Length: 313
Image (cartoon, rainbow, N blue to C red; front, side):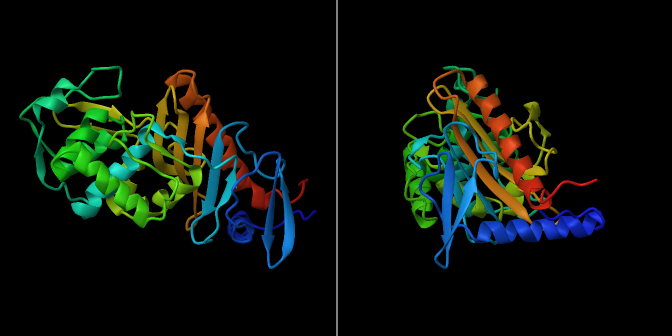
């Protein structure tokens, strides 16, 4: 095995990123991976074992290196409830229809009585808002994506399309346009277990979402102050560690814990990944903790893998 003890760190980082790009480029989209994964390029089989990538021990996952054009999957890619990962599509549809430039706040949107009434109702993730208040589009996107407020998801849906039902149809059309063939949206917030997707499909959305500067900026924010609401924290506690710069958590009892993530390998390369259905049918808190832990192990393993070609010293 090759060791790189004498190469400067920044050169090793660049070499590592290129090796990771080459490794992922050599992989095709795989429908299933259990104890091991077989990949093929130009007719030559490659065996990737559990020792190569620290996949989650349950559920399903998918990873890609931006620009590689290839996705590596693990676990059966069958649609499962995705909980608040649905809000990434909600934000994507809103910003597609009402784009914001970096630093722009956008139009002011009136908080209706329904959004105010839904705060704290039914055990959902919500934020307290006052009817009649006018919050900017960007402020509402912060409330949607950081504390993951379902009442704000539905408010944005009504503002954009007139009703949540009409907005969900727009979400489904967007999913179709992105090639998300195994994804079904039935609500704007993801609370319904009938809102389902696969890890591989979620990467298709993540790739496009991270190309929107405003969305990319918001999902990388650990906390923000929203007038009339106060300080809100991002539920993605991996931010700022392991190179993580986004994206979104999601957890319910049927869905378990889910994390759609983006992490930098160096200054130019971006890893995208999805970990779904962790500790499903337990509690949202237990599922989310499992998804965060599994994602951290996966990210760290992928970021270290290109440079872990031998032992040093």
